[in-house]
Length: 188
Image 1 (cartoon, rainbow, N blue to C red):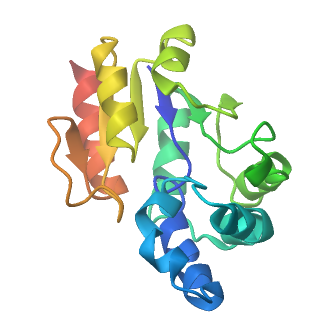
Image 2 (cartoon, rainbow, N blue to C red):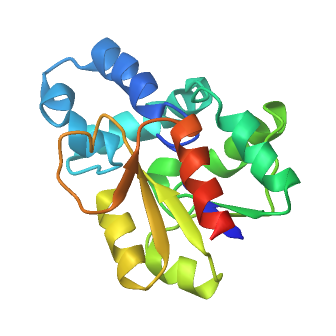
């Protein structure tokens, strides 16, 4: 099976790391007021864009690995599945400059096995189709629904940003639950 996996808030707890930085650097309340948009990577004002440019490398670099993420990704990989990491991180958006090398180093330091990594992934449904992904795991309802609309299975990883939003996409709360869902798909 060819499995696509998002990084932020799926493999790493980027939102928790970002919250720490927002609390530390929010001088005028604008960051706190727009926290959910910021956690989705939306730099909607010059102040928020500057915040991302000044701090995103530290935020991403200090984000903790989600519990069991490394173990389960490597187990899936070692069972013969192809693992495609599909992330919006990348050099094309100026707010994410430097994230490619940071991400590659993070994955290497944490011994995460993968087949390919796709940076600058804005239209994940198209990428999943182009790369013939069988299953995509993401924390974005928008991406999961678009991927499902292309006839590709998707699973929503619950995060701070999506936990209260309704969706008909299959949802998981942690990596152990995700592994169970994937095992059922592989057996079918």
